[in-house]
Length: 182
Length: 364
Image (cartoon, rainbow over all chains, first blue to last red; front, top):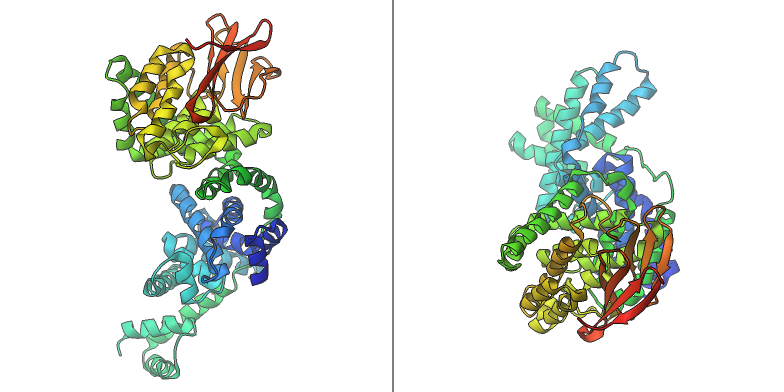
């Protein structure tokens, strides 16, 4: 994770430090955006937007918060905003494709489709549930870190995560019964 | 312990959140309850799959991609972020939008924004002509926050759109100024509308953007803060390049608490004078009546382009203030514009297209 000394240098106006810092976090920022938005191009846009916001707001970061949760808060906010805008276009094409090709897939391909299934299932979650899942599994955040990032109470985080997993489990279980996997 | 309670234990176990006693309770239950045991297996499988989702990385360096934008922010950061604490927040908003303007342009939102802006402007013209003065439309403005908001966004993007990258810094300035009135959506809207309609002078958005203590380019900020400031921007409409209607509007509302009035005045003035050029395109430039030229305020200079090939015909000398209210004479021979300098003073200049010279005009 990002060195505190680098953050302090960036905050004190060292532009090179700030750029270095952005390079260190860009993958994390992108990954969250990618799984929340479920679309590479949107994720690239959102991640750039988040990096610019980090760049301009670095001065407002306070050390009492963890830097990684501060960053994830920025990117999830942008994504949830975007997600709201794009919501009508959420598609279920992906698993229709899976069903069409379910008969003759080989194991290797099947695991790829499994990922698609999971992504499609995540895509069906309400925005905050989705963000909780992404932070838990893609950023490996604890309940508390998720709560800080999303500015949600701890209990809400747990209930979102639990409900999200239950819903995902149901969706994927249905896919399985459809013969996609297992 | 019932299955519902066990469900929570199962969930927490996936996050390694159980103590030994709880693990025991869970184990005891799942041993006797095949449904819960199956559920736990499925949840574990799910959790494992979520954990092993591909750790995707961006296909190109995002930092490299945004570097030009960061450079521009840096430029403005020194003049604005340094002087106004709020400037940071303003900066971050328009910048990213620029990044995706090509892709997202024809969205419903933008069109909605353009249409909303049109409705607002049209409303003003109608009510204005009916002699009710601009207050009515102003009320509408603030009444319909969401519409105003959409309009604002649409306009920012539209504006950024109609400019080449070379002029991006100017665009940014205006967008920033326009967006400054964060908590006053009506201000936000009109200032933007203004920036677009009155040929994109930073001054227009600036005067009415209602951001106290933002001493950019010596224009008058802080309209909502008090009547005196708003009055300053009101005088912007006042000098109005000889447009008495604009002057009336500016004077009438300038002293009040509605900082949108000067821009409304300008909208009216321009609409009247130039037959209301289409909303859809090229609102950033003031096109001459014969269609040969388009004039545009860019930073501290006015540039005149040939409409045919967009080549630069002439460029004014650098002015020490914000440029606004570009108005062509009816025969397209002269272009009049105003320079709003600090403390609300206004100088009017006239460019003669035949001689390509500009001179300071007397107040009319």
